[in-house]
Length: 501
Image 1 (tube, rainbow, N blue to C red):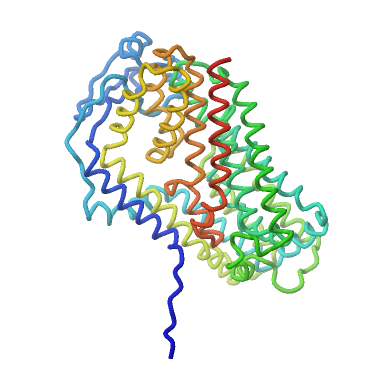
Image 2 (tube, rainbow, N blue to C red):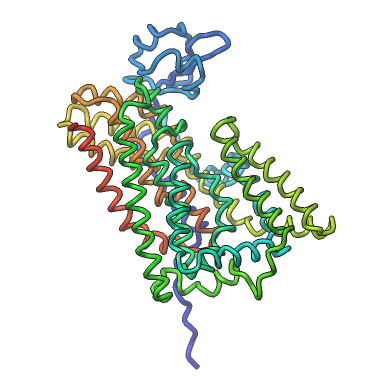
């Protein structure tokens, strides 16, 4: 009897993250630990507090003269009004500190601490899952998808263009990113009904967000806080970033459309063709869709208006995950009343829907554990110091291309846009002065580099996204790497144009 051979397959998101976690821990043994002194503003006592690498804290007057003395870029008003509200690295203060290698106990504890650290996002995911579970159970989604399919029949490409552009607009203006997690359970069935594959849906949503955030125009969490840290107005270089946003989004949409057209013509060309049946069983409508009744229309309208309210709250009312989670919880309760489900059935369906996203929630926590290991290992500042010394005094054109590459690397170790800005920009911005460049090109290089690495970094949102739609990381890499190459070349060209004009 022939022995059954086990078919090799790409590991799950959890295994990928654990491998990266182990590599990150190994780096804390190899890369010397070090830290810059950090400057923070105490609004209550109107003084600057300087925390040295050894932990000592001293106070200095909260004045512009103090910033000038410390050679910290930025205007005192930005500290006073809270525009810069995180500790800022002080140039020229890097020191090696005692090595802090992350051992087996640290590695074991890091995923648990990662979950604690991201509990706000995780709860948001659970509540969204519960609401969607109820909508699926009553048939409102199936009815809405069937109706939308009839409306877009023959012009399904409009869906790709509209979704990608709309989300990229959110990314470039207020950093729409984590909030898009809510869209996948809704939009995947729509794209499947249009005879596209799940990869088209991922690309439209995830790349829409990534491209928009990468080519930020007025995003307060990246370009604004970065410009404040550089001591310039965020409007400096804005024209170049607007052009880059429009062209970058156009390149992305064309790339997605070409793949979508190929898949629509021949489903076997899909990168996820081997998992087609499994994915459709999870997301596609089963059986004949119910009629889109007035009750279903009201329920779906309320659900869609929730996203409008969420976007307004995030962009204009300083909402974050607590407020967004509460909003969806209220929406879920309203939908429960309108659905005419009994109390027990509503709760059961809500809990079942939340449980369906358990793996997604855990991936978010484990991804954060990698950042915690790197932070506790105190190697991020060492990497920043190494790169800043390596590129000082270079030719301007070579300098800015290398700066793009450096921010790609730093973006892996520090995936937070605001965190990377306040740590790196005070160090990098003065280097532009030394090579005769304006500081706005540093801001462009920072957002471009951080945006590029977000396409693929396991420490970002991509693995949580793939886990949600049952797609493995290798398939995403096969899809995205050509586009990443195009966007990287385009970014370098835009930086060179900005430097020379």
